[in-house]
Image 1 (cartoon, rainbow, N blue to C red):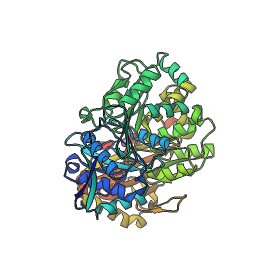
Image 2 (cartoon, rainbow, N blue to C red; image 1 turned 90 degrees about the vertical axis):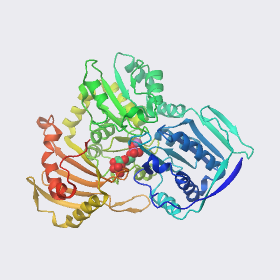
Image 3 (cartoon, rainbow, N blue to C red; image 1 turned 45 degrees about the horizontal axis):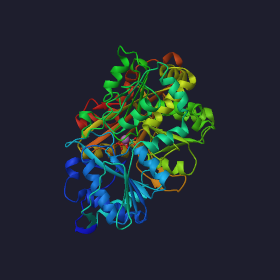
Image 4 (cartoon, protein in one colour; image 1 turned 120 degrees about the vertical axis):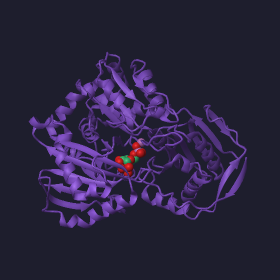
Length: 545
Ligand code: VG1
Ligand code: CO
């Protein structure tokens, strides 16, 4: 192995967002673009030299090339052991699990998660720390700072490694490249949390599930676990082969992009349980018989209320957490169970410190992410297994479990309206103008509702005291309604404005309404407060999730 030192100059736009660096594929195909970012990781995280690095991605376009480059750079930068998923595949939760199992110094995940893939789609790279979780803001800031001053990177030349074949290669330098089955360690971890015999009895009893892997990374995980281990009939996992362009699908498990699954659930087959995952396998959407979608904010609340039914959580939870824009359904469960509840900024990195400190056992986001202390990422397949465990233990359908939950705790009607590809300046100006008006809003009425409070969310981490500011604008109303505004940190084209609408309804007689109808006054108020149409020219959201 020969190490080359390649001269380079900084790119100005390598600041990681909510979840790593995400850009259109052609941006990553520019000479040195990926290499600069990867070298900046090695420079900012010196523990990787002499340490172990876990590496894999969701199989999207450019994954294979990027894996080869990163292995060569890791060797040149003195990483002692590189553990790579076979053919470069590893789900985000699997990377987190393997970092922890191996005591690795970190991991690199190649994914743009829920963004489309292919030559015209998106690519992404994310660094996870030795706790298995997304690097904390201090580390991503250091990586970004490094990208601004980089002058050279190091890369090994003349390597011929068979990354498609499981096995271990020891180089002359003593460094090891280990290609592993992407699924094995993850399944072993799931078996410590769930009763596979009980789940298997359910799936062999005539109960019929459908898991939509959306042609992304969870196909092999779903097949191994649901079909091979638990005995669900072949075909229970749909879109099961990871494809570089996801077969043209948009691997974001929401009612818009998971339409095929929802149609199957509503169709003649009379399926009992549906679930979908995203590109890198950390999100999940749960769908009941007839196509009833479980709102992700409800899902995390229901999982918290019932987690004790699975062996891994039988002793109860230490505490729970949700991201700020996630509905307050989880707060009601925390109160009912007398558990501490934490409200964090959007993105999984903020849950990591609470999980590490043993302050919470379960957490989630409105964007279809739920997870627990078993790893430091959200985990789609885990959530499906926990839901199935609850269905098996309660002997009730998803529909009955949800209805029962609302009867006990009330229903938080919820929707997120995304306005994608807004001009960045227009979006920033809209947010700045609203920020400037927050103090004047209380007492004003919009669409028949009166503002009781308005603020900008700022988070102080209760473990290390670090402060993260400007994490979303919140407006509360007198009818127990709330609107949150924030700009996405994962989009790659212009800006995406996310408007989160929710309203609490305690009366069981009013739990069967259409969320769109219940939340219409909030949507109107949001548009009026932000001068949405005047500023953006938009009157309808791009996506309602
Ligand atoms: C979005 C979601 C957020 C999630 C993040 C990463 O971020 O809103 O809840 O944690 O994606 O998820 P943003 O900044 O675009 O709102 V994933 O599945 O991309 O790792
Ligand atoms: Co994801």
